[in-house]
Length: 240
Image (cartoon, rainbow, N blue to C red; front, top):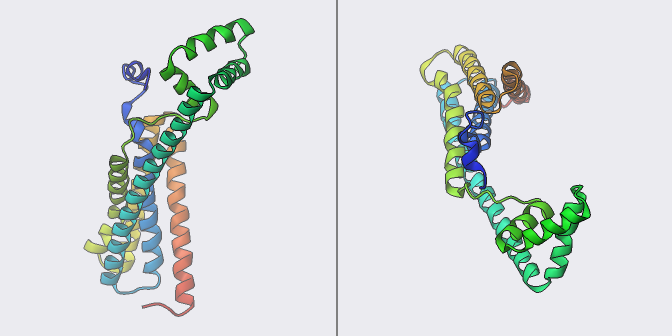
């Protein structure tokens, strides 16, 4: 991507931010799913071994689902870009006058005067690669995520889902009774979410307290939803 080497010289633009979506989404979804499920099942299942087995299956299945889903999502996005690029290339080759008029319209809408519009249009359309990039970006609103690799995106998503989902499950493996394991699981989940909030702050700056509190609040909502679901199941007489 043009200009990336410039941004990489500045510490304010960490290159790891390109994976921010997958890291935060994966880890946050992992811990939210895990704690919501564990709180819910703890209210209806008294056997701690059952809770552990069900928790492991839920987290592993969730990680696989998130990894494969992200792989397909990134792959589909790249395929869509490629398909639109082919259409633009065909239009540039078979009706260049129309495409030039679209370039003029783009720069006119940006506020350039007529002389500048003609100069820019001539410059852009003299380079087919540049012309295509401008059409893709400014006409269709698409940008090529050339650094995004579907397999890598899927692996990162699944890995961080596990990293977020496993910690809340650990108390159920090492701590008894169930009530104490539940309490420790909630505390650990909140700490994990606070850490995710810190990562968001490190990459995006802004207010540290806002990033942390927003992420933790999502966890509290998940705990509440899981608790209500567990109580409903127990009320209906489906406890084990």
